[in-house]
Image (cartoon, rainbow over the protein chains, first blue to last red):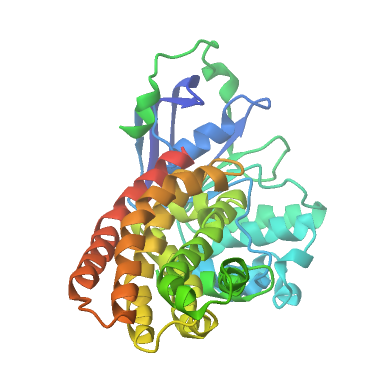
Amino acid sequence: MEFDVNDLSVARGGLSVLTGVSFRLLSGQALILRGPNGSGKTTLLRTLAGLQNPQHGTISAPAESIAYGAHADGIKSTLSVAENLAFWADIYGTGMTDAALAGFDLQSLAGRRANNLSAGQKRRLGLARMLVTGRPIWLLDEPTVSLDAKGRTQFESAVRRHLDGGGIAVIATHVDIAVQATTLDIGQFRTPMTAIASSFDEAFL
Amino acid sequence: MIRILIRDLMLAVRAGGGFGLGLSFFLVITALVPFGVGPDGLVLAQIAPGILWVGALLACLLSLDRLFQLDFEDGTLDLLACAPIPMESVVIAKATAHWLTTGLALTIAAPLFGVLLGLPAAGYVWLVASLLVGTPALSMIGAFGAALTVGVKRGGLLLSILVLPLYVPTLIFGAEVARRGALQLDVSKPLVMLAGITFATIALLPFAAAAAVRVNLR
């Protein structure tokens, strides 16, 4: 499996943010995206996930292979931890809820309502969601935010297991993660701040 | 798709989901109208079908802005957009969940509220029939409006302005079925028109709503 990004340009809010981003990842490889706040990491990940169209360039990956882990975890506070996970497991047609709970040490919290969780526990639940997707390419946006040392170790081992199983991961982060990975500083792709020609109608075409 | 429907119903029924919101609003309207109009049974019976339909429509409108907004705010909508189900199915599932918790609940409760307004006995069957046929269109049109305003903070006002004119045909034919039913006249023409509107919205609007959601997620 191969995840190939070629000469990609992305925009946010009508402004071009990054131009000429290219990288190529094979099974078992990980890429860490670095760059200061506002440098376009999230925009790049959203484009890779297919939530917005690139201005230019191509993204090639096998069909239905990408799972996106955003800032927001998409947790419903009135559902229990297990129900939240089971929902996503059903959506993706996998049944791996138990393994995902175990992977982030959430078994003891399984029956607890999500609104009673701490920020770090919610984050662990959000990351456990990546496990139930069963997708080979993970796009993670600052996954270690609000995790404690133990949570971060669990996260690192989850990523390592994923990579050992032939997966691919693209991780935007500010902290050091103990995972064998290439680092890409996206500061070098930054577009000088100029407004791009875009009409209001563009959104509707 | 079924899974989203079940989840939305679960969320609606649990605390803070607003399951009874539309129903209690409907009750408030039908309970207050006799106080405003006066206790004259003849007048009430005459306006009952229209009031019940307007009440049902407003009750439906009340819960619309939550349809996509909550999922948008907690990031679920982004994740659903990446999931292996088409956005059209997400829209249909959410509109169906909305209909089950408001439209269908209102339809079932409507005869009870008809009593409060002194609806003539012949009108009940056609009132329920018109609501049963018409309210799916209200939920579907509402889902389209909610999809258009999904990224807008406090989009409820914009949503009502967008959706109200689209509700007018359903209201006209729905209330007409109920009115003719109460007067024991022939209801077939408005009922067919009402069903036509409902089927057309169900056939077309999921695509429009899904496109609107995708644009708003960009």
